[in-house]
Length: 180
Image (tube, rainbow, N blue to C red; front, side, top):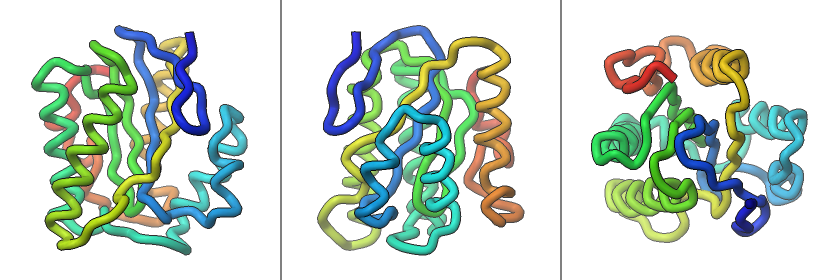
């Protein structure tokens, strides 16, 4: 059964791998936000290319202390048993990850975003929205799709022109906690 959360309907399925993406608040021009919030793969890819171009908005996730705070929260959620953490990447203005949720997905995403927003805003000595309100999710339907998503996540920095990007499970394989 889908759950409504601002713009997108979100399905809630435990023990099924899920591809997640969310972005920093203000990282997309307002005119593009409505197109981003769709289940259309083509529109998702177009919005992701815009995020990768980093033409507008904040890029706080380029700062090691900010990216590492997000990484710490991701690994803590895995260690606490909320999800199995597969491949992930912290891009300059957005996050991609593949998880296998062990509890409600909206609760997982909300927990990650709230915890990291508070910590990162503190590090930045700022207040206000850190993450955009919504997120994109896609339930993985086959092992072939899971492999495509893994390649997408791990190759995202290279496609965005970020050589030797340090904030990824591809560059930190010890922090990829499942075979997902």
